[in-house]
Amino acid sequence: MPDSDENKDAASYGIGVPAPRKAFFLKGLDHMDWGIKDRMSRIFDSRSGHTVMLAFDHGYIMGPTSGLERIDLSIVPLVPYADCLMCSRGVLRSCIPPDVNKPISLRFSAGTTVLNELNDECLLDIEDAIRLNASALAIMVSIGGQYEAKTVANLVRTADWGARYGLPTLGVTAVGKELTRDARYLGLASRVCAENGATFVKTYYCDSGFETVTAACPVPIVIAGGKKLPERDALELAYRAIDQGAAGVDMGRNVFQAADPIAMLKAVRGVVHDRLTPDQAYDLYRDQQSGSPSE
Image 1: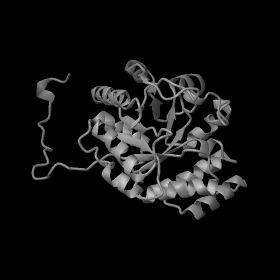
Image 2: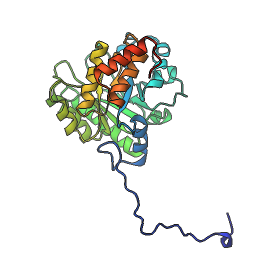
Image 3: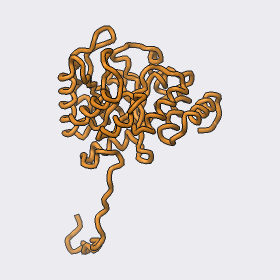
Image 4: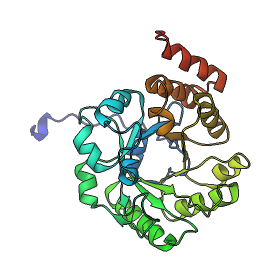
């Protein structure tokens, strides 16, 4: 340490200059802790305010589904084109190179497979999520289902851990066979997730009234890609969701089951970040598919 007589008197106090005040770029998160904002800033692009998440956590309930037989061959080449990866801890450790430097939305609840009905899911160990440097913890929430109370409790507990350790919580709305994917239900499910502490919400798009779902949810919403659609239709889905207030997409099968997954992911990015129309994005997809150097 320098001697006291060598110190220069402080002079640059900026008296009369007000301290800058800047709202956080994602809605509803102005009062969150620095760590949560930092991690959300890695998941979402601050320029567009949107995110393109790549979901390949299907195996935790579906096993080696089509397109996910070999994660190292099908998914790893896609990683550079995604803003965030959504996966299970097993695949993360075994297949994803740790130097990809992508934020991870970690599947944090588990408990059933496609061979059974939804059951009372358990949570992973919060210390393991921290060891994995997860950027968000994804929790399935079954609003209206048999295990609604248990899955909401899982969300609440995870949000408490998130507040303690600065980890965002992603509430993932599950839609059972008996529930309708309409604006009334999706609006209720998304709002319940946000009210119980979700930092952001993953839900489904609906053809009528989706703008009311996003408007009534006080935190960002990303949409699930859902079942495989023709490429042009999937781009239309992404466009409509963003146009009606979604802050991003979390696509899986509509990317890794596409005829050209890298071209598809680039086209989705064009919609989400650059506001390309579905036709423009589909042209981009076809250009990339044919080996054009255009980005």
